[in-house]
Length: 109
Image 1 (cartoon, rainbow, N blue to C red):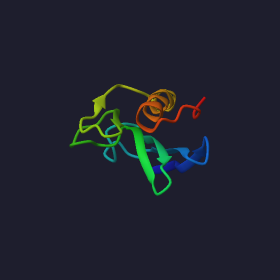
Image 2 (image 1 turned 90 degrees about the vertical axis):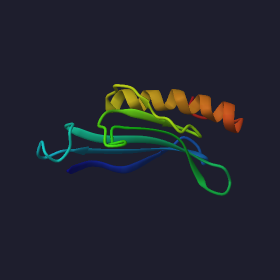
Image 3 (image 1 turned 90 degrees about the horizontal axis):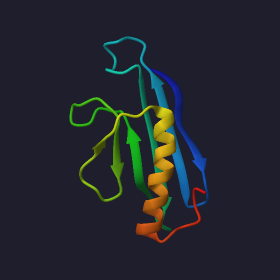
Image 4 (image 1 turned 135 degrees about the vertical axis):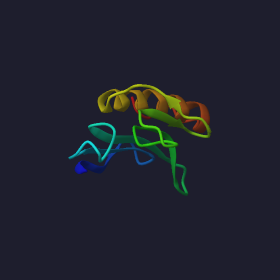
């Protein structure tokens, strides 16, 4: 895999950051899709960074395709998304989680 972005961090505040990774396969047998990517939103609770949402197209239970991992949810939601669409959607989902679960409302605006 050819790494295009390697865990790039974008801080929205000292407590909230987005991490992006993007790779392009070099050969079809390397990965089922041309691009392999993740966008991940983290929240620092004062002790540790907590993953509140991650959208990726990494293999999940041997299945390819984009899917969403949300804070404290066991099941993932399978949603066909591009890397750019995932970046927009993770901000929306994370804003909701920050407000509902952590009582934080000023981030990601």
